[in-house]
Length: 310
Image (tube, rainbow, N blue to C red):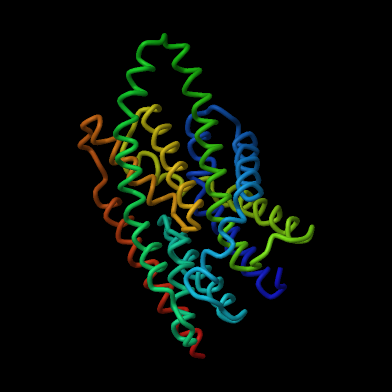
């Protein structure tokens, strides 16, 4: 790994763990299924499995995909600008798509540097930001009622056991998909290779940094966004949302497209709400979240553009 990119990659991964704590451990902690340490262990297992098994698929998601070749300076500005934008939003307890921040920052730095940009691939990535929540919403809508009907045929104790196991499995699936897609994206931007023991050791370090960010700073704030701040769902609804979100992110990984878990979860929650005719929704928070899909990459683009001009 290029040494000058290691530090910003490490910081960004730590912030990733903080901002995504709701998805890594929030569901498990909220259900009371596991202790805090148990939830962190689940996140570690999922993240490490994701980065090792499918993280290499995200190696060229930015450099080599959106642009044929980028300089070390461009990649460094991409990481630093992403840190600034992610930290700014997270400090105000606002969910931020750090993948959108990275894409926006990379395009801003690349454009100012005069490097060619692959417009076709850029359009594919941006379109996925809006298609992903729609697909997640549809999948959740289709699965939610079926899962609820199946669970209703069991006794209370059986349902409770299913919910507890489902919480762990769904959280593990989300951690796996985030490790492969999101941490794979950071590592690919900073390194561009998975060759050698040093690279794999750095990869493990990044995954552990994400969990450290979750452990130290993720006990509140952003975590609440997924729960009662947006809308209230049954345990089966939450499980369905998490599983479908993990599936959509996995599909994005196969295409080397960076996808935000927050975008998928929002779409899934509205799909579940529509399936159950839920009308009590925090529309203000929903609008703020959707607005972030535009504001975050634009802010990162502008910041990286001017940083590259200095």
